[in-house]
Length: 150
Length: 423
Image 1 (tube, rainbow over the protein chains, first blue to last red):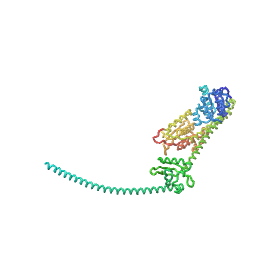
Image 2 (image 1 turned 135 degrees about the vertical axis):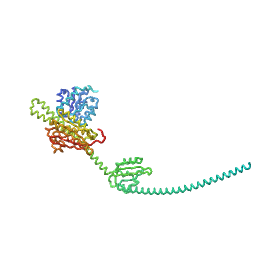
Image 3 (image 1 turned 60 degrees about the vertical axis):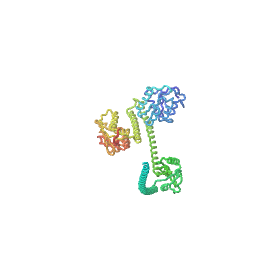
Image 4 (image 1 turned 180 degrees about the vertical axis):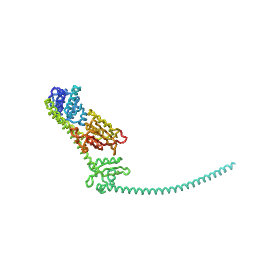
């Protein structure tokens, strides 16, 4: 339950270790205060649309950015992206696709669907931290979002 | 005068009449003579016409006989079909082909003999042909008397003078079977490729995630321990991270090798000189401390090749040359290109670096084959395997020679661009 809590980053990640490393990277950059993590695509959609176990959530207060792993159980990342970009309530929320492997077809498809950024998670920890920090800093600090849904 | 006047007139009239009669007689005689001549000429012409007609008739007989012989002896299926779609005449070869007697087939609708699944298509094709559009390579299946199904490829045209459709068909059963088998093999291969693609996808994804955790947690452990970690402990953590990174590189290279073999080849005229310069600039940018005497001998022959793939070849050879000249203070790399036999051009990349044992020259291009230890020169041993695959796919060859300690020479060939082509 997230209730009235303000969430800045919605982290959609099924891998616990990736999630922990992402959080640690964000903590180091002091960007981890308002991160909410879901483990699969269905959870992401419930969170964003205030359905399922997120009935109490006001969909009007959207996160500043969604970090979306592409390979997810239940509903996969591409499908989550499609549903978010199709819906006028969520279309304006920036989505950063985070993937383990660079696939031309994924890159093409996600951009077709309107992804805002596509990041390949590096294996080396320094590069990983640097990538997460840069992406987090850009979307939370530099980028100016739409305040409410249209 | 009065009396004499009429008699003069009479005389004059008489004289005139005589002259007129004479003229008429003369004309009549001339006409008769001409008619006589023309009649004999007509007779001659008639005779000549009769001869020509006979000659034509003989020629027609001969042609008919020859055509008949051709039809009788041809191995193709030849038949005529009337407007109702009934066989009128069927050549002997057709009868043998289908296994019927003439009375079993002539006068019967051709559709009866067509495979049930092909009847509709055959009917509409026949209707089109009867409306004046000649049929070319129309294919349908027939059921022979012994139940065998045969594929026939037809051409046909409608003759409105004869009210008949004349058809020539060829047995395409075997070619069609081969084509189907080829199609099956092709589909199977395509499915295998799709499977391989999916496999590579999951390899790159599923293998990279744990490696990221191995490297990441080793690093986080180091951070947790902070200054408490011993020098030895710190070295162990570095090894874990370094090896995780190397395995990540291996996976990437292996995938890139696999992709090189499957990606579509799009050859276009390519300036190799410019390509080598571009690649060298990129390699030099990450080796800024190095002083290398790099030279590309221009002009180079224009080749017909896939730029993105050949760029990988140039990249692998140039970065190898840069890597293996690392210990030389007077590092030198020369690139030469020249036209050779069989429409190929040969390119040479020569360095004065560490070189390799020439007895391993063949093994050099295998996947994960390395001639040096990881400690001497880092690398996964996939670069030259990729280069070989690219060059081979272009119909060229790649080979190498070396004097250990005195440099290596790599040569590869690519097809020359057609004369007059421009990059």
